[in-house]
Image (tube, rainbow, N blue to C red; front, side, top):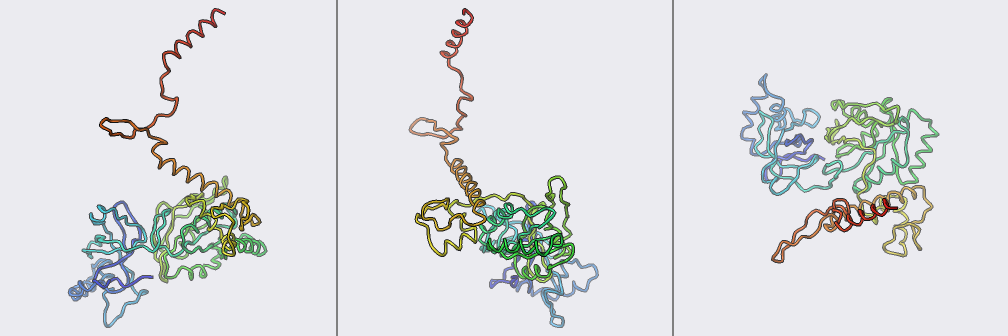
Length: 397
């Protein structure tokens, strides 16, 4: 995954691991630091021998290489710099996200600082969490404590499918259920179109199998709170030291422990991103695209086509998808949410819905906020007089 840190133009390249206020922690690529720094190699080698040399200095020097002692990725840590963003990038509206491949200028090896001069094109981009160049999503659920909820799992799977990256489904706490129950869950998920990995972080079951899927890739780990995501990361990356929360006995749900997005380096290569836990991921996709995020329905669409091009697969005549599949009820509910969300966006984008046109003269006009109907309007004098007359009549009677 990681490339040489020197581009063809001699630029210093790296990957953004975390965003902290207006600073970006950038991990430099394995390899030679840069051709423009080689002229100072003798001075850098002398720094290595100093007893008070900083870790950034030493790691930066080792990455330049030593003829008598070649450096491999497992022999020295990859240095990182705390960087700012060039004003030019801010002016053109270039956002810097976690996972971005960036060009670094003016590295200060003594202070561990640098400046991001450019952002390379992204292969993928997620909005929630905001992270770039993701290769796969590791979706973690628990089969017990908290119990597995098919509807919640389905919602997470749909959100993961909508990103367009590969999905890896991992089921934790398998030691709390029997082998027959595992097989039943496995068969059910296979009918949905997913192969699942049963693990136990506490008993270290199948952790190596998960680790093999993560090598040399940028992976986002997601799932509801309390299923063991932080514990799994601590198992895969002992240096991560993430907070681990307990499951609430009252709600049978986990307590949220992750507060921000951060990439952690895996021991055998690759990066793993922990994400803030959320129980109900949003469905912001178009209603007509939703059906393609169900693998079992997608197979039917690949085998044929519906009679109507705008078919939403709700028992329309000639619909090839049909309703004889387990998650059809999930699809109908998600479809209703997607339609409501698009209606909300349309209302927000339509100025007539919340604004009114007011003439300014000379043919000019402008929009002003529209007051809620009958909430701020004054009662007319005629209505007031009529109301008083009605009261007088009632008193005479």
